Image (cartoon, rainbow, N blue to C red; front, side, top):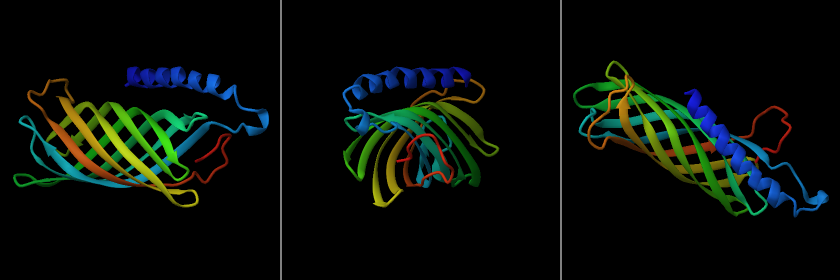
Length: 198
């Protein structure tokens, strides 16, 4: 886990140097903080499938946040973390508790003042199905967010998670994955911060 955090911080540091060079062209009166925090909550639906896992349906609430920077040209990047808690349902097992955690990096672009597209690479994925098994792997997100009313955004994401091994480190043969659709509501933090919340 520490290696994953170090990797994410390294990526963030490298990408932040891009902002320094792009911000030099801005006049002092035009500058504003490039940093932002975007907390969100949501709900996802999908399926868990593969030859080495119990196939079934996933339904889960999730909470998370993106911490990043926005360049002068509207490009954004940063770190994405989320965790979900819900249910896994299949014919043999019925409904079981399901937990999921993701850590990754994201990039995106503001195509309109109220519309943003983005994608994430999830390099640390963990999930657990109650009394059945634990999984680890990686994955991807692709999404869009729209500002409907000031300071509130609605987002829709398509998510793929690759289940590469069990929690004990045993490699899973075959192609095992979960595919989900996530609907999110993004809200500002209710505390003063030394950077811009977008």
